[in-house]
Image (cartoon, rainbow, N blue to C red; front, side):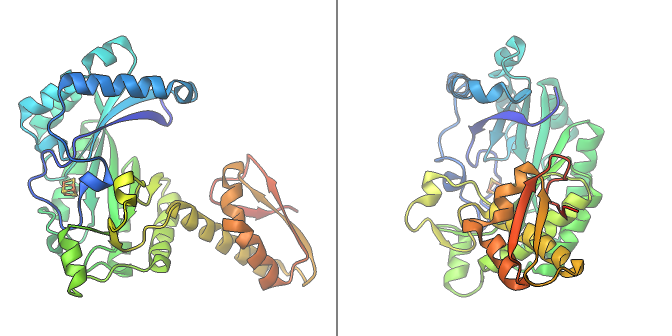
Length: 344
Ligand code: SF4
């Protein structure tokens, strides 16, 4: 039962969170804040997703139900057990194969992990955000990087699949501190990571800091450069980056919800497209091809649209920058994702 899972999200916005982090409003990021969902509501939600995703599930080997948007392991143990038990019938019937939760690194006690294991939680996503103690302190996260390391060690020892969520552009973060964060996360060998550029959401403390000039969000160009560098390094380390950029939700898209910061639609495409362009340009540069010449690139079929870029801008730029007459693109299943080569 390996491969990309079909995920059924169950949102528990801010439940368990010991405090509100300066940038966070799960009511907008994930789902409107609600009371604790009842077992019946959870079951209804799972059934709804199973019906909706019937066709998609045929192509994906595993089904996971995931508690997102809060700090699962910071909830009282009985509440955690209640949530997990509400999914037991789906696990027993084989409609759901395992569970996933997201939580904080400072709430991963052996007792909690044992409960999660017992109830078939296979994947734990940690909102790490940064591996710089000063940035963690400024963002009022409430833990240190040593606690992150300890938590990840515990999760590996417990044979959980480990995901790490990082933020780009938190207060006090810069290219150097972010590069160190990426390097330290690679050393922790998570099974996957998610990258989220920091945006200023209405009603958060970060909005107040932004209004008084205490916080300056990244520009889109800066965010792309940092995300691009991180994506490259995680790829080199063979750690999948399963998400780059916030998932658009109706609440985030509402007028005024995003006050400032890099929140373009399809942020990941922008990052991947820029990376592919830079590789192609470097190959052409070193190829000795003359102006007026033509060439064909080999690209993984999954990268084709990113390689062209929005409105074909990558091809246009390559043609103009190097005076090329024709550029052809050949899908090649043997070509590694995220890489470019020239057809000989
Ligand atoms: S960032 Fe995580 S821990 Fe902080 S308030 Fe949001 S959901 Fe809770």
